Length: 83
Image (cartoon, rainbow, N blue to C red; front, top):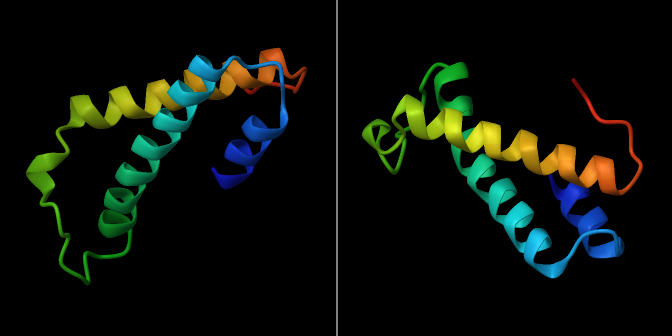
């Protein structure tokens, strides 16, 4: 995720508004990534925000927003996008 953010800072193919939206999508994804790690690694620590803060609809929305953002960056920067 940090590599994508670095790339955004170095490219002129993305407008400032788009850049802010994409960085926001990355941040929201990183937040739910903590939930993924908590579930995947046996929940050996207390999850600070609480599981109710992450309904499945919100998680799906944030993942889809990240995919859309990465596709936009890839298409503008002539980077091979994923399917």
